[in-house]
Image 1 (cartoon, rainbow, N blue to C red):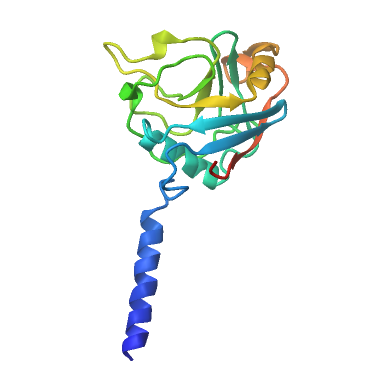
Image 2: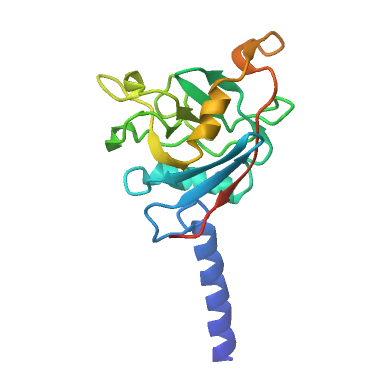
Length: 198
């Protein structure tokens, strides 16, 4: 009887622990610099995330990756010498579901420099959910100053040339959605893969 009670308690404890760690922090929990591969229709990009400086943001991003929520999304906004933005819409321009918005970690010391990856947000500094962008310039204006900035949470390690090619695609105003800077031919993020630790 005691062993049965112990087994039940173990199952309950394990179940509770599993639920408590479904926020991305459980993914390579001891790795402060997890790496991910973006598999796109224009090539692969490998990014090293900085969980040491941006733990909330990295865990949030990994949670979407773990749920396969970035699969078959589009890069919907490309502004040459500024940003390549994606992660929020599927190929039919339908907005993907999001978890709750996260705390802005833009004061972490990481800068919006060329090829760094950053969370997109609305005017509210703490409104980032799932969209991200790659900096295609040294975007100092996006760093914190008198106001909150945009949270950088990693840097490109391989695939710079892929981003350079993306930045050169033809874009236009999309009258259906009222958006500017939309690629005329879709660039699809087929999936994001969490790579083994180095």
